[in-house]
Length: 194
Image (spheres, rainbow, N blue to C red):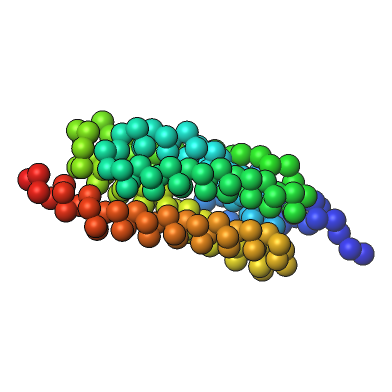
């Protein structure tokens, strides 16, 4: 007799509780029991992260002095809005309602960026800090979208994998653009201030 997913999920969770060795973190009762659930939870996490970025990126633009940096961030804001729509399409593909779950990592990266703004004067040194903070965010997104794409491929959801690959490529492009702005202008100017 074939068991239902929820029954097998409950059984897996019960086994995990019974067999969790000492010192190993015990899962919450809502813990993902399979790759599909892990994939869906990660989608909720990055959905929250992208929505949070649509609020944080305009603050970065206002605080940047470099025209090239402002343009790079503005362009990425447009991409981020498109990425949110793409994530909503992925949710649709997997039959789930788009739902955001607070992303502690992104919240921390945004808070760190805000702290950097408070610790620097307006100008090229702050611009260098904005680039550094933005690249930390990009690297988090690159890691997340790479993982999500691989999960989608493994789970046999090629349409989702293709959409996630598109976003992954955009994140890599944004990171490359930030590096170019840093190397070709901002970092050199910031170094001259010392």
